[in-house]
Picture (cartoon, rainbow, N blue to C red):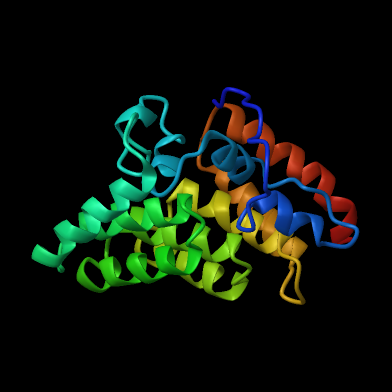
Length: 211
């Protein structure tokens, strides 16, 4: 699903999942989807699109437009929002750009504003959940994904995220059994492809810890 890309050189990204994971004790860096997401420089809804075989990341709203500096794109969207402050699409796009600029809390704020306008937008809520997780706000991440599953119990992507949120968080809320259960639910929904292989591998590695 993903093409392997080399990481960016230079100063490390404080919001990188890899850097968060390095602070964990006795845990492996296994959140493959988010690692690939950061390596590709994709943000916001562009990540969710990668789960679809028909997706075209170049057309997704969270990706930086080629040839336009990130700070200029942010300034342009901020200007548009002054005229349309209640536009959830613009708020979501700006949140994605804030995240890429390393402004994680600003990204969260904008996702929250967008969801106040369109609370049933599942993609926005999943984006917010991912941002929370990468910032270490694990309870908030789980809460957002569980909200998605209340609205859409058969949402395979939400089960996939929830399994990883439970299994690989680095606080006292870590629950390997719940993580395995969510990943097994993801597989049971008839999904196919690389994500299923990853889920099976994660379950295999996690089961010894659940005993």
